[in-house]
Length: 321
Ligand SMILES: C[S@@+](CC[C@H](N)C(=O)[O-])C[C@H]1O[C@@H](n2cnc3c(N)ncnc32)[C@H](O)[C@@H]1O
Image (cartoon, rainbow, N blue to C red; front, side, top):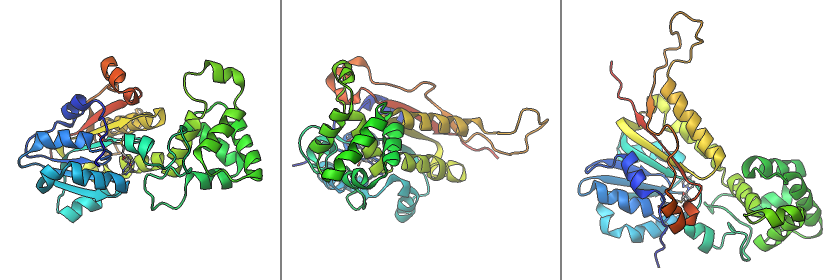
């Protein structure tokens, strides 16, 4: 049975992606194909949609959900950093819009059985792409205490990272940590009681998020995409006035997007003391969202998973010789 994901900020995405009939649009994070369906409806009858996801469940699901549009849709099980290769495979040099909606789909979190959630008892896997070698269990059972602490602190912004890492290492000496419940209990045991009482989120939330980000190399992939894929050769992957929209759910991701968009807009990087520009760098993209767009309260009430979403958009500047 096909699954669905309630897409976040759909109207805002369609607006900032500038979806137009006949255009070519990429969704690099297909998930439950929620945004995909809405984008396709805007670009028919002659538009072309390219959907990418590294999770095989997402691609199988999208084949079903998007069947009515199959002649205008191309689906790829791949990482979004492979976009240039995918486009050349299709004989396409540039597209009108690219969407990345980072993070997890509802299916991955609640139904995949891959241990993304601390609720319930599942194997501690957390791979979006099951062809990847290393699982979350591998990390918690083999990493040095200092490396575990670093992951929890950096990716989870977990203030109790040191205590949690130490408790994980102590526990794994007695028994391998193989399931979500085991890990959640260890984390709860490592955090002082005061925090447990006052905190609105489950004590294991940050640990689970940090491990997921590490297992899937989420920040590295996003950085690579922003620095080496989309902006290669002056953002040649986007047509002039093509739009790039990125929805992030984590402050580190959002910061990375904000800084990259700013750098692409700035152009010249020469020190101000120089009388004239010697770097020859010019603005490549124009930021369309000075501040990130966030869901309205009604959307958060309807779909609590949208609460930390932030949308940023940028437009390719047409180059005049
Ligand atoms: C939040 S969901 C997307 C939901 C989708 N926008 C919708 O409306 O249904 C994120 C999806 O992106 C995929 N994903 C995350 N990082 C990826 C990457 N680097 N390459 C390809 N897919 C990725 C995940 O597997 C997941 O299915």
